[in-house]
Length: 61
Picture 1: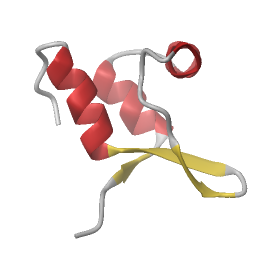
Picture 2 (picture 1 turned 45 degrees about the vertical axis):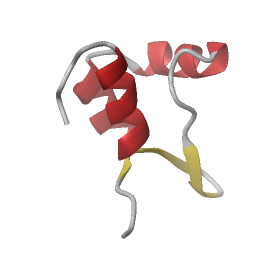
Picture 3 (picture 1 turned 30 degrees about the vertical axis):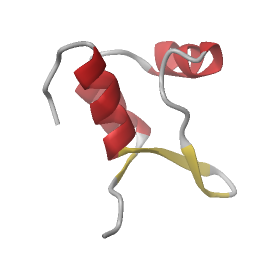
Picture 4 (picture 1 turned 90 degrees about the vertical axis):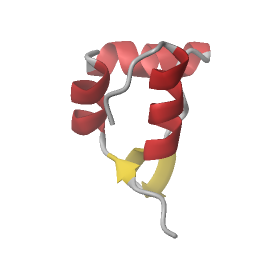
């Protein structure tokens, strides 16, 4: 089964945080790191984002 990859706009809308917060939280280890999709493209594994939400008691995805 192929893992669904969420791009930044969907991640931001899903977790209710902005782009700057997401990148800072990744840098600080407070949010899952993205995966590289190409030379200039990244995304987040749906399961990683869901696990992060679950750890905060939120069920969005």
